[in-house]
Image 1 (cartoon, rainbow, N blue to C red):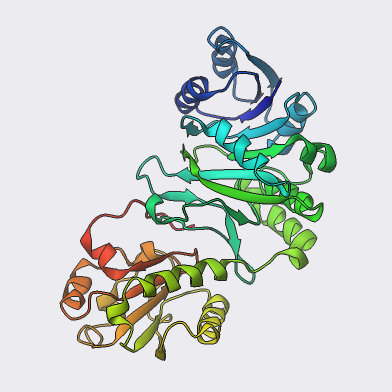
Image 2 (spheres, rainbow, N blue to C red):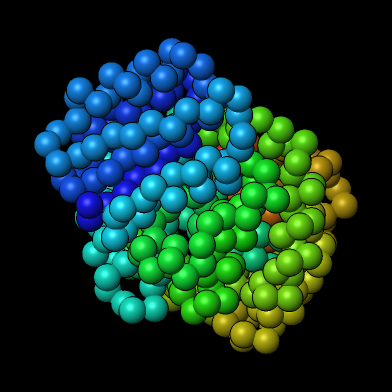
Length: 384
């Protein structure tokens, strides 16, 4: 077989049905599909059995059955030991796949000898906004790159990242033969990140091809995921903390430079920084690096981060009042994620009359103009 697709299943039947429909429509010939029914019950097992009669020629289906949930790492490992393909893919059973995803992953993996692993762009099916486009780190936090962005705003070419999630993941067989199986001490969380860090240590890179996209419901992640989150996270940082790179800043500043370059008529205006970021260490790093980069004429930075509650929307009339509405300076807002500023149409409308090209930068790599929020609805709103 040329390909092996591994799908752990601990899933609602209706969501699973959407996934399997998209899988059978898009799967390439010469593919071995291995489902692991990880305690999902008899109805799911019967559905998977039925698929054996529906697949196209050149595609085989195997089903591994767990009477009780054993977790993602155990499930994937049991399938990896049966994998025959030269290219191995992991998929979540709550994704909806788009045509040509398999061939695009293979072509990207083959495009460079250093590329060992690949992810696609995951979109919220509710809105179409970006849910996942790789993981980028600041000092101590990994974030989903370009979270909530419009898909049109992400890079157009394949780019390197440190990590991607296993919801849509591919690797060359040589990576598996070199690295082996997943570490089963991670239970339903961070086993994907750990595996890629092991592969990176062996010299394999991970990339995102933005032309590979799928919808992802995020409907099931297996049992005890939230309970084990702290343990999994602590284990990951203890093992790899010294190897993690603070790689979000190149994304941020390349986007900022691009935005400023698109607005030459405003380049003469001084910029006032408006700090609304809750993660203070990352905010301090941002302003320091921005000054060092010398790409924006910042005259001052005003810290308003202590004027609002954690999480949820940030209401600018409440935080800023009207003191900045009439400012002739450009404003540069720093916020954890720009979606927290969406509920400000009135304030932005008032500000819009005086200065339309204020900028919003967030810690997920997004850089957008304030008028983008003013002009209409945004495709993503969840902050994670």
